[in-house]
Image (cartoon, rainbow, N blue to C red; front, side, top):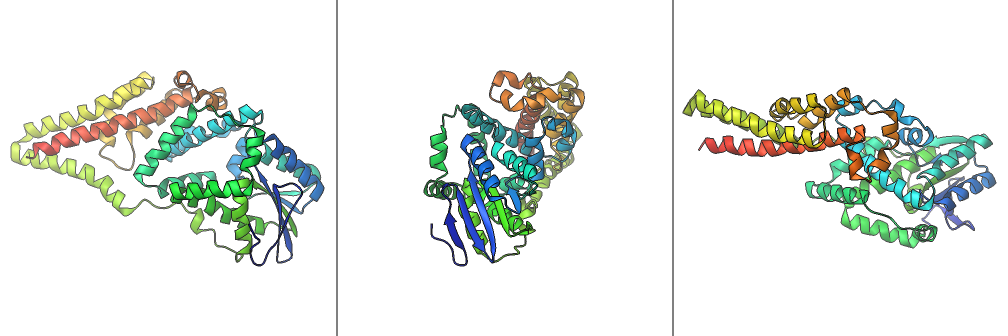
Length: 399
């Protein structure tokens, strides 16, 4: 790739180190693979040699704390995560972490080691460290909101399949993947397959990382970033400075059409029950209401049983599902997961082992955190089935 206008590019003897000079400031970009021994050694060597004014790393505060603190799970309020309806995002994050940890295990290095190594070396040398990445929760929610229903289903299937994948990759493979032409091809393929996802996960973060690098004090800034971001950050450094990050740091609101659908379904069902009562009598309306309760309660109760939920959670599922199906702002899965977390809270050791336990289906029921996830997924599925079956029966009764 040739240098963009307004920048001078010099490639170091290490092929993963790039220098960009913009308006009298020097930016040293160290492209890494997050599960590579070579990247970890390279990061230490370059920082010690260059002694920059500031070191920027591709981490946000949450990811930095999760990587650097051994007992990080003690600070996680699971019930608060459920209350804010972020359980699905947490589950996706755990699956991704599980796959990356498994890949790191193959190579004998923990994922993100080179990023933590960068902060450690900077601290040793008295160099200021800047966490430059966007909040991972914002990235996940923007990514989820950007995809169509079909793309979401495809992504979920891919994530689930990755749990059982046994990656076979060597340092030589990682070295090849860090080469610019290979990464450009990978980014191109991702953009063609899921352009909205690439926009959020790669392009937006290129802009965000670049602006945060610009905000770091000093004339010589060293940034430790995933190799897939190098090309995009080079382009962004050559673009106008002082980019407004507010737009790409905002969680998109739910589209009005989905709000109408969300309230329209329960409105239609309740309206149908009223019409049935007026036309066919209270007894027929009552029979339909009872069918609605059973149609929602039974699948959700079965889901709770399959998840190995606490007996109180199982019993509650029968009564919670018919009610929450008529209230779009909260789902049965979240209510029952919150109840399960209260009745059988996970231990710290279960948080620590969750990424390993994810790879073995038999452990899903032994780990209380994963059991909460199972309660969430299976009771949500049961409630959806019940809503479809019960709603179809009630609407059919109108005719």
